[in-house]
Image (cartoon, rainbow, N blue to C red; front, side, top):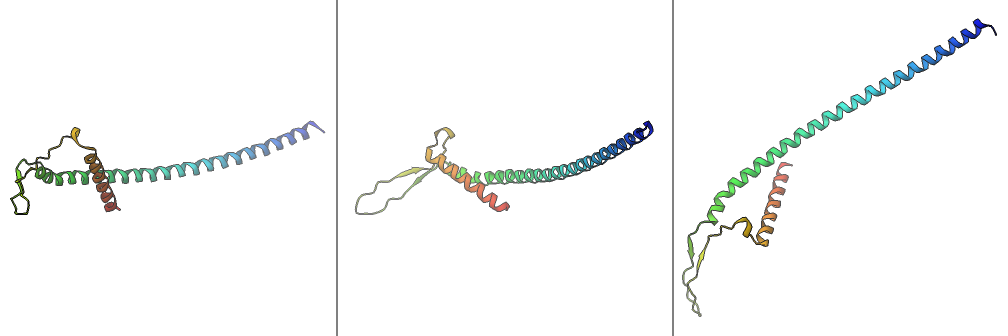
Length: 135
């Protein structure tokens, strides 16, 4: 085999190898572009979902504030210190005059476990009603 033929053969092999590498490079670049496109789509989806959830949280906080302000008159009604008198009534047995006070101002530290359970239940019921109202 002559030097010229062997150089031509090596040249053709190298050209073929370069063509294969260029094809693989094109495939890798196309795959990279597709992955970047998918990442951008997912990022946009998550940003939209995040904005939706932030809006929902803001609405829930607003509703919670409204419920608290709606409850203030009821709280003041139950914390007044006017005594309630139950009138005498006639029965076979003598009934004593009983006087009840509606001074129910209970500090957070002196709540009974039943009161805390009731508060937790009412909070859960409110959250569920707000959640159902949003859906």
